[in-house]
Amino acid sequence: MSGLDLLTVGESLVSLRSSGPLAVGGPLTMHLGGAESNVAIGLARLGHRVAWVGRVSDDELGEFVLRHLRAEGVDTSGVRRDPDRPAGLMFLERRTEDVTRVQYHRAGSAGSALSVDDLRGPLAAGPRLLHLTGITPALSDAAHQAATWAAREAVASGTAVSLDVNYRARLWSREDARATLTPLAGYASVVIASADELDLVAEPGADEATAVAALLDRGVRTVLVKLGADGARAYTRDGVTHAPAVPVTAVDTVGAGDAFTAGYLSGQLDGLALVDRLHRAVTLGAFAVAGHGDWEGLPRRDELSLINGSAAGTTLR
Image (tube, rainbow, N blue to C red; front, top):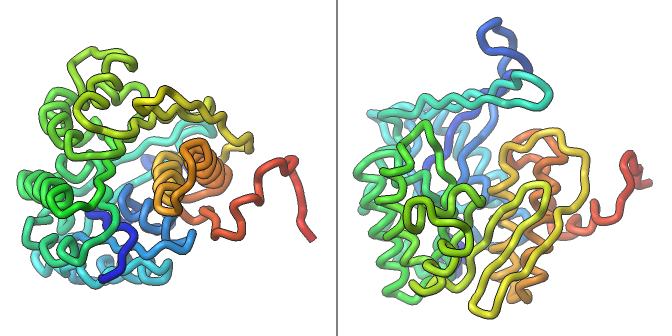
């Protein structure tokens, strides 16, 4: 794992997608899911050296997860196979053209057993950046301890930390999330959140300006606010920068936030100016919503300009 640009840790899921209501049955298609692995794949496709660490079941479903990550160029050498716990499952139901519902079956999963010992070796390899999400500490006490330990050790060793709040109401309450994520955000140089997640890393009920000011005062260097179809804002001590969304025909919004994060972190690793990092972030977000799947439509580096300025229905010959 030496020479890594980014290390990310968490739970990768087997995602089962339905094109209609689950209650009436029908075919399910099998995919790889998970916020951290989505980010890892997005960065790997752009040519960065990336590793994902977690636990997977020691069966065909665990092999499915590893096979997809390896095929995308993500280092999985630090992954532990767990013979005692099953794979986490995620069911995505396309309930209407505009509404997708998600259900999780991840209690007691291999991924939820992530421990500090799982992370010691990978973090000691000295990645340039450690990426965490608010999902991992919600999975179990052990995973919470592992994420907090990793953030603390990374900062102590000079590795920058990024944190995507990524709140999941099915995993924990807002009060429990705030109690965990507010201190965790103090280790991060970059905090990423949607507007309705910002108070989870600040005081209850804090508006955007108050939450951002509190984070910057605690040493966070950049606060990114995802605005969906309105693009994104980036706050630093120098002020605020806005990037409009790249206009595309949206077909699947699942994974768009992870794509945005991958784009921003790629720009940071490449040493781009803030406005250019934001542009890469919204570009990857646009690729994500314009294709089906969490990560399948994300671009290679030579495809980054593919959708900018292209009219609907464009055919490249």
